[in-house]
Amino acid sequence: MCGIIGVVGSSDALPILLEGLERLEYRGYDSAGVALQDAAHLWRARSASGTESVSALIDLCESAPRDASAGIGHTRWATHGAPGEHNAHPHTDCSGGLALIHNGIIENHAELAEALTARGHVFTSVTDTEVLAHRIEEFRREGLNLEESVRATLNEVRGAFAIAVLDIEEPNVIVAARRVSPLIVGTAAHCTYLASDVPAILDRAERFYVVDDDQVCVLTPQGFHVTDLTGAPSTLNELVVNWDLEAAQKGGFDTFMEKEMHEQPGAITATLLDRVRDGDIIFDELRIEDDRLRHVEKVTLVACGSSYHTAMVAKYAIERWARVAVEVDIASEFRYRDPIVDGTSLVIGVSQSGETIDTITALREAKSRGAMVVAITNIVDSSMAREADAVLYTRAGLEICVVATKTVLAQIVALEMLALRLAQLRGTLSAADIESLLERLHEIPALVEHVLASDAAVARVVEEVKDTRDFFFLGRNVGYPTALEGALKLKEITYVHAEGYPAGELKHGPLALIEPGVVVIAMITNEELKEKLFANLAEVKSRGATVIAVAHENNQDVAAVADYVLWVPVTVSLLSPLLDMVALQQFAYHLAQARGLNVDRPRNLAKTVTVE
Ligand code: GLU
Image 1: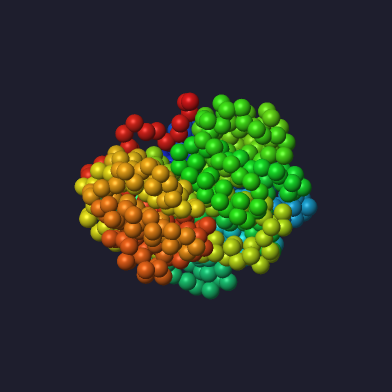
Image 2: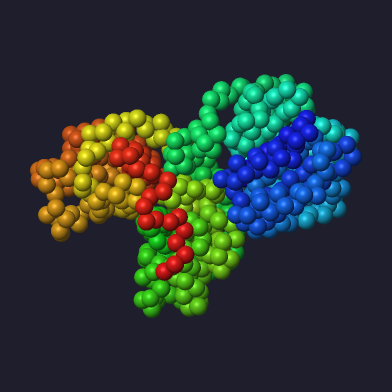
């Protein structure tokens, strides 16, 4: 998830780009770069200084040409290729006369790069993006203009993109296009803009337009014209923007948490992208030979906090689908218990930041004992990613709110894809079963949208229980880690007492705490186990608790046992945490709002825990 910006027609191109990049930094800051075009030159500067990338870029721009009237800028959140100056955007073609920025993932970059290299193109980065610059260059050499070349290139591309291209041969023009990744266009007198998001150009443009999938826009100082990928004329829909700058940085949402919850469908889509080819689950990054993976004797997952809950979901999925024994451990416990792992063990560390010290040291311990070590992380080239034998990236984009939402869902998706890969290698699921599960997984982003759209119903339930002091979350199978995650979210942002339990454990102790005034929230999204859950709920109801169920929309029986229901769409139970957890995020969010708390900055907590 990078931020892109462009401007054509303004004598202030450079300050516009730099200020826009500062406002887009929430989308990524592994590196930043700009390209500017004056009458005869294309000038480029790039910096890879982590969180300081944009300010370092500003320093580099001291020597930029002052009379440039067109330019593009990019702040990167790496997906392919480590954060570093050579991988920073803009990328150029072989001549250096064409510059391109990109947000998204070009799925077929490897095959395009192979063909381009064979035809003599020289690559200077290891990003998926650079192929676009070289392929456009080829079409330009064949005599197509920039707009035609961009269209021709994009017709060959699979994946997600928002791009903007400058070409020294066509001054005062930017060609931009999108598929999946966001892109807006803005206009003002004699000046036209593009950006990933409104804040970047909010106080510059007077009118805003949304670019749709597979639209190509040619921006000039006078305005823009639009075509589809066949070249047929098309139009952009105007966007009514009445936010102030602060609201705009949160995309019109009140908080980063809410914004990031709404980014979950996109995070899942990006995490699934380019990982299934002809029915095969492909992890290009999984540098462990298939044969070693096939013969894994034990899988151990290590993680902390919400990542521990996603690891628990993975335990159920790997055991069920790949029929291999799985243990899950809190990273700080694994490290100090003389764990039993060896060359036949697969040890998977899960950490959003890839910098969680407990998880890093746990992986080091496993590696020193000869285990195959895989990192699941959202941050390219993080410490964990560098130290592991292989890394699977979740591609959730930058998460700003301290409590994890979209990265949690993306972790579950990555881990469940890995579970399916293991099942494929070990032959424990048929090709038809894998295909059907992949189909269900690809349906999840739309179903998450559906849960997000039920927000008002969740708020109404919260209103009924907002003064409660004790919450118990119950679940069975993957409903159990979902219950733990629901309780953790509530603790983190509402500071109320909340506990998660396997529903069957209730009568072994916690039932003693159930009395009138207590709220029990139960995950009833497992068809096979729902009768058992109903019995558990009868136990708590008869002791006076108020019951809220999270249930599949077709499970109307639940209304008989629950006081309130948070409905979620039907899916297979192992995928249901991807929906149930969203309902629980909404629940915690509304309870925090009702109590007037700042959800983005919960007390005592930090986003990345780099101390033991
Ligand atoms: N795939 C591109 C890169 O790694 C763009 C990244 C993004 O949009 O997040 O540089």
